[in-house]
Image (cartoon, rainbow, N blue to C red; front, side, top):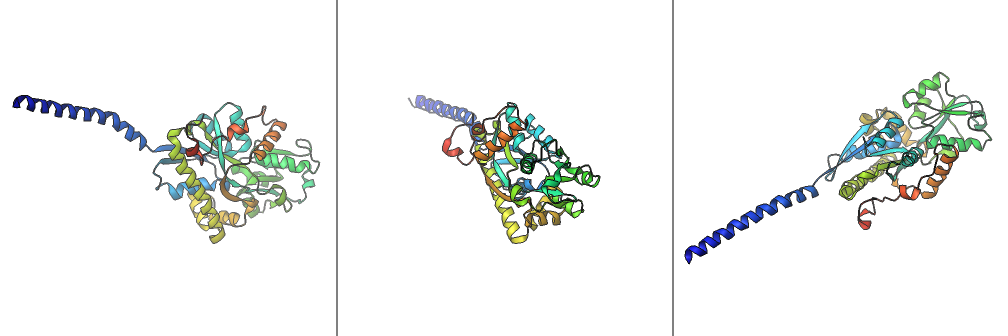
Length: 339
């Protein structure tokens, strides 16, 4: 009897060990999955308006626990757009009409919000009245840019017809000054710091009467591919958005207290602009630039959508409600993946 009990105890112990090992094998991947750090690839171009992306990365990249951020620099808005379209990056700060165009083409994206407003400056040569734009060529960052659309609307108020009384052309960032100097463009409506660079080189001056009409406008939005907005990305996205929001606060405080000197230093290895140029542009609030993470208002998006359709930038409307249907802040409350 003693022998039988001993054998039973040994069998029971052996069975317990086997079951522990089996459960360990199946449970281990679950624990590992919960601890997985998700990767986000963020694209950007060298513009002062995209400072929150680089400040967020520089300030927090060593402190992230749920997300691994990779910043990818592009030289043009076209290459930035192409990268988002093919999935080379997950998120990009793009002109609103470009985001509309991507959605129109059936690529699943969401507008997460905007991290700045304003920041673009209308600069001219040897004239100072809007009526003097008749017969002129104006450089813009893209024909599918808010700058181009806002300029067309502004000059329509002066009875100037787009394409007949004046024209706009897309000018690459790195050739703006050369185009001004060569006389290929007579004016420019560009994101900073290119207006400041033109003034410093004595090639153009800011339009004195453009502040009220053009400054402080929405220019770009944060567009994200929908496939990174599933539940397993929730904590990573929340952590990154918190970092981006904090970066906006950091920049604003730096402008108010230190004339943006810290921000000017941070941007140098990423944007490559002269520190004094960036500090001056920010402290002067060129283009009435402001930094904060907010959700764009639907009525503003609808206004730009209608104008894009009228200008044939878009061939058919897109669903604004669908583009804005993802809310990082309310993710936990809503629950479930984004469809």
